[in-house]
Image 1 (cartoon, rainbow, N blue to C red):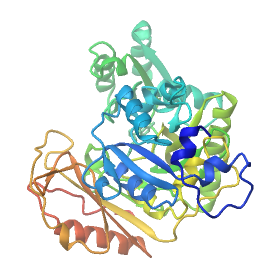
Image 2 (tube, rainbow, N blue to C red):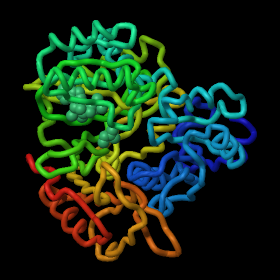
Image 3 (cartoon, helix red, strand yellow):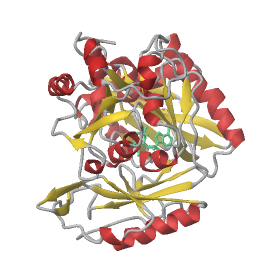
Image 4 (cartoon, rainbow, N blue to C red):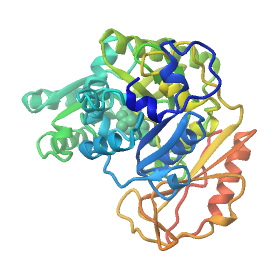
Length: 453
Ligand code: AMP
Ligand code: GLY
C-alpha cells in the first residue's frame, strides 16, 4: 500500500486473516470508486456498488439524475483519459469501473497501467487487446476459431480482397449476415435476404465507408436460426464467476418486429437456459474463452458478455462484449446478492478463485420507456411526470436530465422500470403497470416484453 492509500482507506473490523496477508489490501479497505457512463446500465451499477460496505464514496462520470441518488456526478467525458486521470489523482480514487465499451476499446486500461501515478488504481475492464473481442468482429471470430468455440462459419474481407468477397457473397446461401468489423453503435450488422442486398451492403461498408473505418473490414457469416440469450461473467483473466443470465428485446416493435434498438426490455433468469444448456455453455463457450484469454496472455479484469444463440440444443456465440449489457444490467444487478465491489476488488491480483456469486431466486423484468421516433430521430426535453405513483419497482434513469427541479427526457431510451417477483409473469405485470403511470410526450414502450414465456 502506498502512503496515500493508507491515509485514505478505512479498515473494516471483520478481519479474518493477518494484516500481512496479500489479500489484505484488496479485501478490507474501503475505497473511493469512479464509475464511467451515463445510462440505465450505469444507474443499475451505481445502485449496486453504493450498497457495498467496501465503497467509501462513489463518483459517476458523467452520470444522470438517477445515479445522483447513489453518488456524486462529475461532468467528465468517458473518453477524456487525461481529465479522468486528473480527477482520480485529485480524489484518490481506488477503482474505476468502466460502463460503456468505447473507453475500453480506446485503451483506458492500458492508459492507467502506463502511468506511475495511476498504476495502483484498479481499472475494471479488459486491456485494449482484450477489448478487441468487442471492438473487432474479425478479432473475435479468429479468437473463437483458435479456441474451438462454436460460432457461425465466416470469412473476412477488405478493399484488397473486394472482388473475392463479391464472389463469396454470390455463392453464399441466403440470408447472409454482414458485419462491419469495428464499433458501429449497434448498427453495423445487416442480415441480407437477397444477394443484391448483400452486395449493396458490402459496397456501402467497404467502398462507400458507410460506417467509416469500422467498415473497412467486413465479416461475412452464416445465418443461424435460434433463440438468443446473454450470459455474463466476471473474470480476472484466469478464473471467472457467473452473473445471472438475461434476455433482451432488441426490436422496437411488439412481437420482435421493426428496427433494432439498444434494447427495449429484458428479463432474468432466462426460462430456456436450463441446467443441461448451461452446462454446454460453460464447457463449450465460457471455459474455452477464459482459457483462451489466459493462454494468449490477454490482460482481462472485468465483465465478459457472451451474446449467444441456441440452435437446437447447441450454444453458438453471436458476439462478445467487453462490458455489461444495457438493459440487461437493469435485471442482472437487482438479482445479484453477492457484494459486487468485493468481487471486482478480487480481480486486481487475480484472486477471484474461491469466490462465488449468489443469485436471487426472484425473477426480474425491465421495461424501457423510449422517446417517440427512437431508434431513429427523436425529440428531447419532454417533461416527465408520474414517477411518484410507481410502487414496488426500481426506476433506472437512462436518458434524463434535470432542469430547475423538473425531470426532462434526454435520450432515446429514457427510463427502465425493473420489478422483482417470485414469477416472471408477476414481475412483468408490475413493470408494465408502472410503465403506464409515467407520462411524457411521445412515451413509447413494448407491452410484450417476455412474450414467448
Ligand atoms: P451483433 O452486433 O453481432 O450482436 O449482431 C446484432 C444482431 O444481429 C444479433 O443480436 C442477432 O440478432 C443478429 N445476428 C448477428 N449474427 C447473426 C447470425 N450469424 N445469425 C443470425 N442472426 C445474427
Ligand atoms: N443490450 C445489448 C447490449 O448492451 O449490447
